[in-house]
Length: 314
Image (cartoon, rainbow, N blue to C red):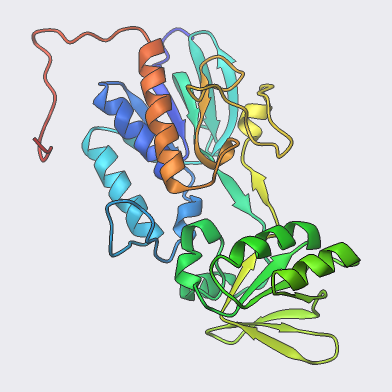
C-alpha cells in the first residue's frame, strides 16, 4: 500500500455515536475521516427529552447538526458517502464507498446502527413527526403517558412490549401483525395486565393526527400513539463480510473496549448488542476512541506543534 495515506481511524456512520467518537479521536490529536451515509436513525426523532443537558428537548436533526459542527471544528473530515466494502490490507483497512473512492485507516470504527422495520404506508414519516407513530418506548414512552396506546407487531414479541407500555398508560392494546392464535395462558396474562388484544387488522390508516386500525368487519379503532415492533435489521454487513462474530440477532459481539473479533475493527451503538439509546452509543464512543488511541503508535507532541483553538472552550 505504498503511497497511500492512512488515517488513524475511518469512522463509518455519522450518528451520535460516530460523531462523538470522531470528536474524542481528534481531541487525542488523531487523524480521522467520517463516512456519512445520511441515514442516521436519530433523524427520525421529532424531539428527544431524555438527552442529558437539553431540558427543553431537541430534534434528532438538531442533535446531529450540533455534533457535526462540534466535530468539524476540531478538524474532522466528514464525507457524504456510503461505505460499500471493507477489506483488511497491510497497515490497516481499505474502505470503498459507493462512488468508488477508497479510504485507508489503521483502524475502523463502525457506527452503522440498525434499520427499523416499519409499516409500508407512505405517510409514515408524517405520522412519526407528529407523534402518532413512535419508535422507541424507552426514549419517549414518557411523552405518551396516559395516551390511548397500541403496540403493533407479532403476537409474542408485541406482548412483551405491551407489558412494558403499561408503565406509561392504563389503556394499551396489542394489535397483531400476524395470525398466531392466542393461547389461554397469554389471554389470561393480557387480562391480568389490562391489555386489550386485537387480531390482525385489514389496514393501518392515518387521519393526520392519529393512527387508525381498520378491521375486516369495517370497524375502526383510533389510537393516540402506535408503537410498531416489527423488528429491525442490524447494519453489520461490512463487518460480517470479514468474519466478525455476531449474536443471534446479527448484532456485533464486542470486547470491553468495543473491539470486534477482527483486530483493529471497533463497533459502537445500535450495531452491537446493547440498549439502543443515544446515551449508550455516546458511552461506547468514548470507550472505543480511547482504546483506539491507546493501541495506535504514540503521537507525542513536539515543541513546535500547534493546533487551532479558535472558538474552543477554556
